[in-house]
Image 1: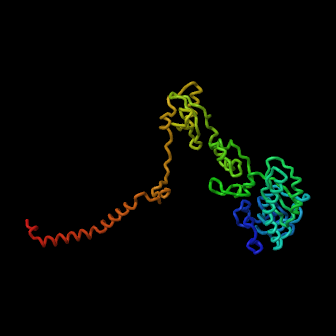
Image 2: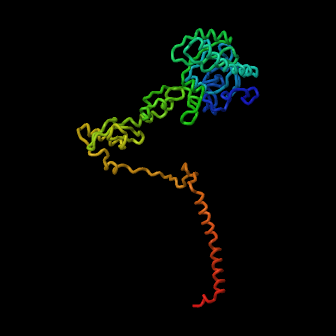
Image 3: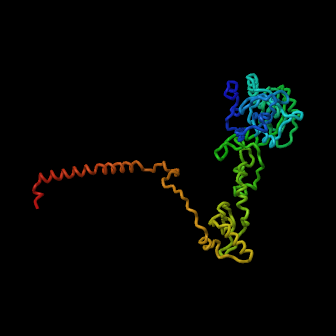
Length: 400
């Protein structure tokens, strides 16, 4: 059974196998014989970022992409098989497994067409339920935002995902929601990053947001990571679509920390020319930038880190170098490596297809010159024949 069967044509794209959803799993132990887990434990994924692990008590032959009916509390739920084999055991050790009365939930059966139809009907009610629940929470004057609603496969229960900065007493809200929709209510709080990942979007890098494409665990991001990378402390540039600090700030911070481990302190340098003030750092080029005028960043001079460390040690001993940059240091420096690749064709130029102005006249002139060059041998023959005929007609000119 697979998602190409007619009963799965109405399923959302995020539930179909082979998609690039962030819940998609690559089983790198697929070609190894199952010894620890011969189909006993199965990983099932549901809407949003919800996953759970179940026991295959009926010994069903399940494959990735099969839609199954699983045990829920109460009733049953519909999900998709996302992983089978030995890798499930490894994932269960990393993640928390939901237990019912101290036991794992069970896989009942493969989903029937009736189960799929009931599940689809429940999903169609989610948007309407979310809009109406927002109105109810606003009437109760609760400081919270309901971001999404997820119905259970049998339609008897719904999970309301909400965002709130402070603690919210939603006991009255649960009573009103249960009376309005006649279902079992479960409230689940999520953060701003989880909401951005659920909604999706395009980041300033031009690609899909990491939180909605591949990230499932979110680590804390601090402004210290931006300082290590010499990023401008502009809140508008540091914040993402979730109004929090961008997760990508943490991607390269370890490399910057390792590179700056033995950098000298960023202090003023005393020289014979004057006092130089620090402005910025080029980390991977190992260069500090200084200027004589501390108020305006004009006339900045790049100084290698080794030279800065040498000047600092001289200043501590009460000495001052004559100049900020020593010519001998440049002479003794290692020559720069010459790149073997050279762009001789101009294939990387962005303006290689742009035509310069006034090209029409120049093109006409070039075309005329080309025609003259191609017709030159014939013109020479014509001129020679014309001169011979003229000499025959005027024999006086041929006399010495």
